[in-house]
Amino acid sequence: MSRRARVARRAVRVLAAATAASTLALAGAVGLWLTTGRLPVAGGAVWFRVTKVGEAHFADAPDRPVFILVVGNDARAEVGGARADALHVIGVNPALGRATILDIPRDTGASIPGHGTDKINTAFAFGGLERQAQAVGQMVGVEITYAITTDFAGFIAMVDEIGGLEVDVPMAMDDRNTGAVFQPGPQHLDGEQALAFSRNRHDFPTGDLQRTANQGHLILSALATLRARGTGASGTLRAVSVLARHTETKGLGLADLYRLGRLGLSLDPAKVENVVVPVGSGQGTRLALLPSAAGLFADFRDDGVLQHH
Image (spheres, rainbow, N blue to C red):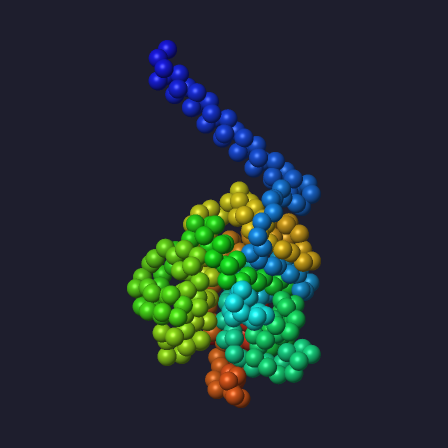
């Protein structure tokens, strides 16, 4: 047998062994999750904090909607404290396979439990994720079941770890403050670019309102990107394994994270509406809910789906 043939056979054996090891590792992870509700994960920097703040209502055959709060906070080394820079309530109706993202402008005036009336994003500074969920749930009139937050560094690391996002940029951007410089159209964004896209408000006449809408658009882009890369049980397990290494949980386990992952990946982005909560000028620098917000919230809270908006 020639030397080239021996090398080729050795490479085949190594590849076969590596494939078998990977398969066994995945099977072992699945088995551990099924028997214990835990996944074998390594530690790492915290990207996300996920808190169970209400009674869970979803299962494999749910009969009630689930309301999840997604918070992007502005915590970073050069800024003291942290506020909720991005606020999105996601209502999911698994029975209908539909969902709605309500984008809440950060300067909207609201009642903050224990702190009177203030901009709704200050609730995060007063009491963290739980207080923010209370304030948003009270304003919209829903029970937030799960709340998720990440900061700038966590967001960038997460996007880079999953290989970037495919985003259809809706308009030209040239904002030197955030580094958001994009031409309109489909583009692949890395973590830094995705953060810049989500922070840009200076390019738009409506400022933060358009930024808030763009953040919801980015959530839908992330969903579409992940679905394109695999939505089956093994794909979900891989995604959850990555996230679990960098997620701090409170009140829930990795089995809950897996179910949340399956719930999210089951949604077709085309069946998810992205709506900015209607606001106008208010007291001082606060924004005030417009009268039409009451009807929007009522339409949203009964089943997580908008029938009339």
